[in-house]
Image 1 (tube, helix red, strand yellow):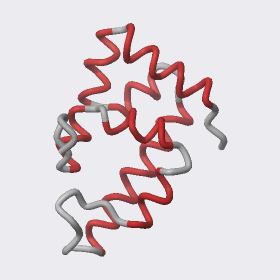
Image 2 (image 1 turned 90 degrees about the vertical axis):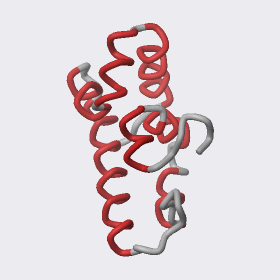
Image 3 (image 1 turned 90 degrees about the horizontal axis):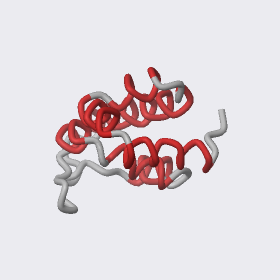
Image 4 (image 1 turned 60 degrees about the vertical axis):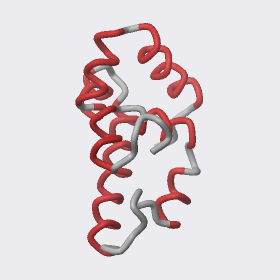
Length: 102
């Protein structure tokens, strides 16, 4: 699976231009991207979220934000897409990141 910059740009446009999409993304980014034909992006989001959960269980004393070097390396492969995921209100809340750079 290779997510392209065009696909990420499509997601960014949907978030910018479609308020209903943005609202749904804020509550369930995986479901809304899948429902809008962005299955590869939804799968990547699921992998990152699953890895994050596993890392938290393995590293109970992780930083307040819970970011490990392993997760950072994976997200770095698609930093724009990772930043889009972190713009979801529910994901930011689950990960303990505030909207103001928390």
